[in-house]
View 1 (cartoon, helix red, strand yellow):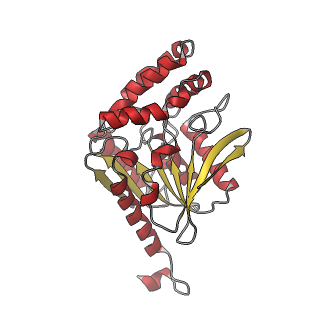
View 2 (cartoon, rainbow, N blue to C red):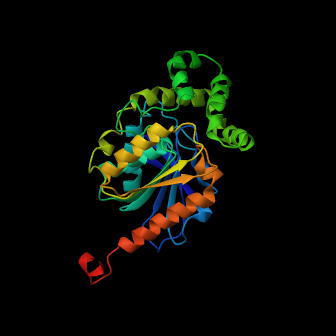
Length: 300
């Protein structure tokens, strides 16, 4: 693996490549809010061999730059991801997003219909046609109005509160405590506290960012919707509405995969089963590719 910082108009995003070229177009992994690229470490060796995998830290997360005055909305993150793909020379890719990263990936797929071959939306948040559904979980939502207070307090206060708010995302408390200690370490500084406040504010500003991507016929690629059966942040009603919207957006090319025993952190809690879902999705992608010298109709 080799990591590098890519300058996108004054803000640097950290990314690294995994795997090798040759068996298909790249896979891009996009983590969600208040996590980092470390989220994917157990999934990476379970992805199909021969694919180049691009893993990034979103702005304000992991090793990437703090946002300073830049926006942290879903739409802004998606715009930076598009710029990153252009700089890295990625013309066609499979996007896999978790949490807020799933919403970001969906926005990119709508804007770059000829560039995204497949989407895997894992434990999505901030993704809905109805803005009332495009909200983070209630625990985080209660923190956002208190940003003026958090911005004046010690960074450790907000980091500890985020830790408590996000712990139910894990099916196993012990592993959740360990993972959140790692993810939130960068938010325990002054710059980290300011970044966390900016991300909390951006949640409310993002509720309409994904509605256009879920309009009928808006997405031109197949979608795998992957939900944790015990995800407390995705109630049954919201999951049903999201699946229906994705079916309309993809012209019935959305498949639902429910992972038993997993909560909101499927990449950490069930990397084997998530890897199997992604492997099957990529196998279908390969089957769709036309054989040289033959038309699509010749293959049917």
